[in-house]
Length: 287
Length: 333
Ligand SMILES: Nc1ncnc2c1ncn2[C@@H]1O[C@H](COP(=O)(O)OP(=O)(O)OP(=O)(O)O)[C@@H](O)[C@H]1O
Ligand SMILES: [Mg+2]
Image (cartoon, rainbow over all chains, first blue to last red; front, side, top):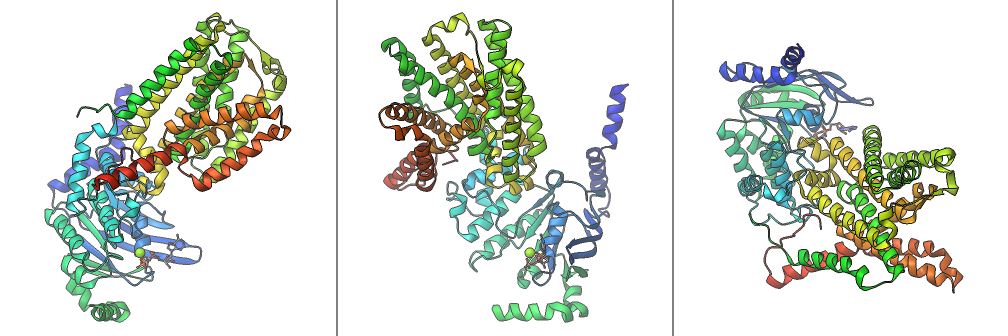
């Protein structure tokens, strides 16, 4: 009797529904967007940072988010990852409303993110930073007895990821002593370690020197080519965006101005008028 | 991977053996008692290090768990019977009590920003102090009460050895604990709570469990302390105890486990000598002022404490000598 109720309850639980949906999506024709927002809005006092955004993210694609400084891009990410709570509207992940879920729960469901402002564990080594992320992916959360260094699989995986982002040789450096570019690479290694279905990348190349950018570009391209991940990328570097994106969405003053293929966006008049023209020129001037 | 038995492990074994032999070679009662005291406060300071050094929680109420252990043991030995069995049972009861209370306090308050948490712990431990003062039928308030220790502890040396054994066991247990995957996440919480969350670890769980472990072990220290004095009064619940633990941890080195033991040694010895000096020079009556000064100097010049600073130096020398990649043995320097 009780077993039955437990089972029934479990089948109503988000975990079960989630796994069912996952099966449906994989079996079916990927019509259902992996992330969807409806009327997503957040206000800080009187200021509306994200305003009524309706957005759909098809699975296993790469979408870039562009927009001028202060457009609300990072805030939009924070709403997706649960760092901030929406004032209005809903966020769906694989069709499940996650608006009221915590950041921890969303990370565990498969929403991984990197941060625009480098956000690592400053006094730990590079290896330990990545190892912690691998540990989370392996769901080793409450083991209190064995020495953490005896989990050799975690260590091997951490070493592998450090190589993927080209940080080899820095394993035992303390994170706070890395160069800015190296910290960004570490950030990406930690995100990859989580092996989440969705990667939210907030300006992965921000503040990097020009020589460091191609390496990160290669890493992102490599992830994209595996065809397994859904990537949302905030960037300012137009050449990089055009190179990588399947689609682009434009945020302006917190509003979703346009969302479409790179060509559509480049040719969209409102976008050009409102914003793109200026930025594009800026970027050309830079390079 | 076979674990290497490193030099400092040998050193620890030698020190422990020396301490075991000590009371049989020397018959200085003063030293036996002083060392026992150091062992007990080492346990308390290590438990505080789990909070402060590993998890980054500042608590001003740690004395409440120490006091809980002290009172549980004292009351049970006095009211029921002063036997060894009762002593062990009372330690268990004290730990259970401390565990439950730290769990609930943690669950309710660890969500708060750290400075609010610090203030709340101060308030809650104040509450326990008032409770002990008012519940005179049980505690006899500030006057306290004496009680008989189990027969087995008539010989001070026996108690010395038991305290030493507890210290070693607690040390070994906590070292396992902080090096386990769980313990590594505690350090991550200390370093960057928000990042820990985005990795999918729930910081609240880690903080609550850390505070339960710290509370339980502080209670063990309290039980031993009461028996060492064969007396208990409300002083075991006062801020002084918390400050002692804080000072020992900081002077010895936060986040090192061995540090708090060294810190406990340094402070207990200093207290001993300074209060000796006070008989001749009354200024040393106020030795707490000296500690204030030492404390400030330590925080300013040796933020890593004695053990932390020594480790850092050794590490620097090593990397300089062979010029190879630095390989810190402990992730927490
Ligand atoms: N926690 C907050 N409290 C108050 N205002 C905020 C908060 N976070 C963001 N804002 C405001 O919301 C607006 C959008 O900020 P956001 O960081 O999302 O911009 P962005 O598009 O990421 O810009 P950038 O390209 O500079 O990174 C800004 O005006 C910012 O000041
Ligand atoms: Mg931003």
